[in-house]
Amino acid sequence: MLPKVTTLLPPPTAEGEEQFFPLLQSDALRLEQIISHGQASPAGFWYDQPTPEWVALLRGTASLEFADGSLALTAGDALLIPAQCRHRVAACSADAIWLALHFQP
Image 1 (cartoon, rainbow, N blue to C red):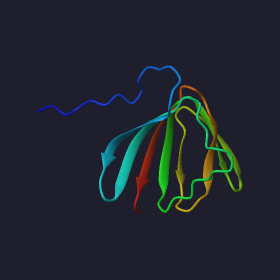
Image 2: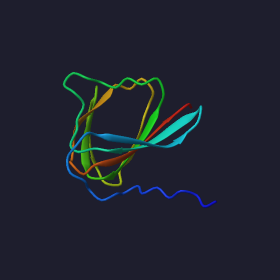
Image 3: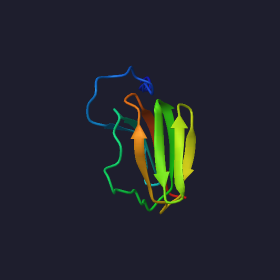
């Protein structure tokens, strides 16, 4: 049996809900593809996750906010967000595609 091919850079689609696609999952990690259409975190909402998260922006642009400031991301940028590091998506482009890896250190 041949392995399944996953397209990490599908063609842009019309605006809609943000989509989450699990790519790999085990007890120690979860890798997901996120297709955003300009979605940002709701006003006043902050992620405060119990495990680290490695994030890569494959397409588009985005701005992440942290307690100490903000980061502008462009396609090809990646960062490791430590566990319990409060952050939020301030803005992202309508064509943004992310990879997010949540893992146990």
